Image (cartoon, rainbow, N blue to C red; front, side, top):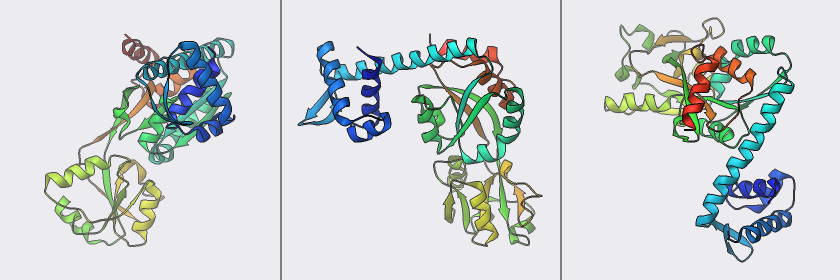
Amino acid sequence: MKLQQFRYLCEVANQKFNLSKAAQKLHTSQPAISKQIQLLEEELGVLIFVRNGKRLTQITPPGQIIIQIAKKILQETENLKKAAQDYAHETDGTLTIATTHTQARYALPPIIKRFTALHPKVRLILRQGSPTQISALVTSGEADIAIATEAIEHFQELIMLPCYQWNRCIVTPPGHALLKEKELTLEAISRYPIITYDFAFTGRSKINQAFENKKLVPNVVLTAIDSDVIKTYVELGLGIGILAKMAFDPKRDDQLRAIDADHLFEPSTTRIGISRNSYLQSFVFDFIEMFAPHLDKTSVQEKLKNSRT
């Protein structure tokens, strides 16, 4: 058995049996992948995949177990490398953070500035996507941590570390009728076209739930994954925006006005997700604590330990 065979095996499963995509991702050829999987099956004495001609169509019952073990072996191999690097080059390395646009644009800049000052030799990589996408990056080992609000809690392979709660505001052009309301209500908001986040992003479920509880149907005319895009179209007069409060800056957004909406929506919780089986280098603990001061190294290590028992 070879680690290379395990990598081929797991990537084929990740790519839903598409050998062409797996070969491209692994910088090899389809015949090479097919050959190595066949050799592994012969050595183990069981079929890992069901075949229809030359096509792989599904994973066999023993294949499910084998792939699960192979993923753990590859994860532990990566952990060995990180552990060695941590002791040999404590101040060097790469930290890959998978996160959403709102976190990358508004929550992370001051943290990253502090982190790079403390760890100037650590290379930082930010990868943006939906909460589902960024969680998958961590479970696959392509990112060290995920930072998001929605969907991240649905990944059982991740440990969830609650960081902070936040809420929303309504953004409008200057002089909008909503600015004259004595008390902002969902009924008043629902009278206007709404621009807000895409369903998979940034607390959208809390927004939907608030309207459903009042038996109201909001007139959502445009959704986006980017807070700045939402503000742009509000400026153009296409509607009012429902926005994460952290994404509004009165000085920078001087062509808009914000109305606090804490009383209308349940707060959302931003979380850090880390793999249950990952080895975290010392500078990763520093980053986590900078982002959420209550998550010091000892508490995070305890959560990792408990998740493995």
